Image (cartoon, rainbow, N blue to C red):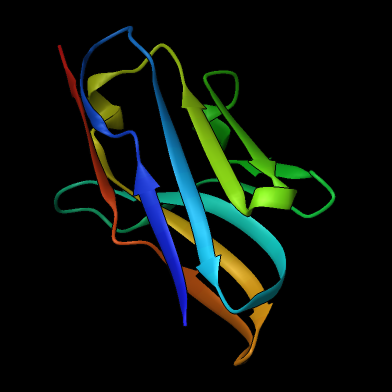
Length: 119
């Protein structure tokens, strides 16, 4: 079994910062990519950022320059540093991983962490 557990969400004022963490655990042979998606009320889930095992990154265009993704491959951790937060960043943020485990190559999702940015 594989689990992704997020932490670090919360309430912050506009202009502030938050750092999300995601820990992957379980029967994992190799993590190909980790990342973050978010879903605001009434909207579809959207990509925030992805990082692969070679540390190549991919960001939503609207978030470049404010959000930074990183990972610790040795510890199966991923981080999302969010700066200059805006009320429109309010959403549930989900950790994502594409990995190779005992069940083969699969996508996994965390349970989500709420980020609320007040104006």
